Image (cartoon, rainbow, N blue to C red; front, side, top):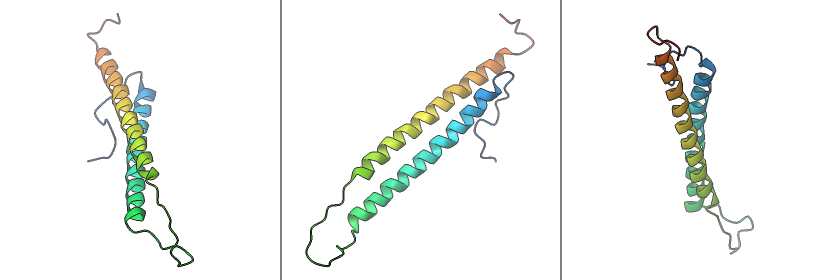
Length: 105
């Protein structure tokens, strides 16, 4: 078992598009991983805040902007994965048309 996306697609003329599809898949997965780490880090600092430096009764606020950013990054990662699947479908379609029974029209 390999970690190569779309291993069964054999391109005839669109090898670069298949390469772009594979890179986009890896990029989307990495973005989703970064977003999950960002959300987890934000929640950790929200639930377990560090005390103020002076030790007095200062008030401080921990924002939840990291969670919003995390969900936005997840959306971008999912879009990259969907786009890579569309590219792979185009390459797969092209490779199915390149057979001997296809007359080129």
